[in-house]
Amino acid sequence: MKKKLYRSQTEKKFAGVCGGLAEYFDIDVTIIRLIWVLVSIFGAGSGLLAYIICALVIPEQPPVADDSNVYTESGSYHG
Image 1 (cartoon, one colour):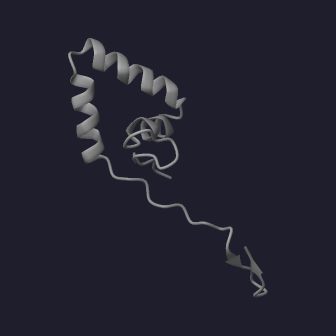
Image 2 (cartoon, rainbow, N blue to C red; image 1 turned 45 degrees about the vertical axis):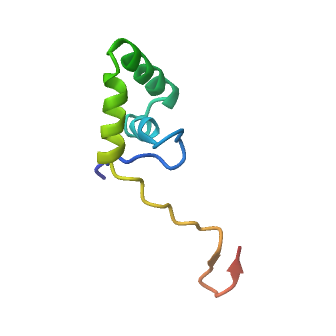
């Protein structure tokens, strides 16, 4: 299955960009956030501009199906 880059719905502080990158590369989101802050500070604000662009370009993660309220094959309700 091909991996896709999305803005995260679960690991988000602002727009979910760092969370999405962390999920895509399978690393801790804190590392991504620290790198992004360092790039923003030492890159004369280029990290902030890149974040805004990513927030606009990267699609939002599709909602995950909630299996907590489903009917079983026998027709009984579990919720």
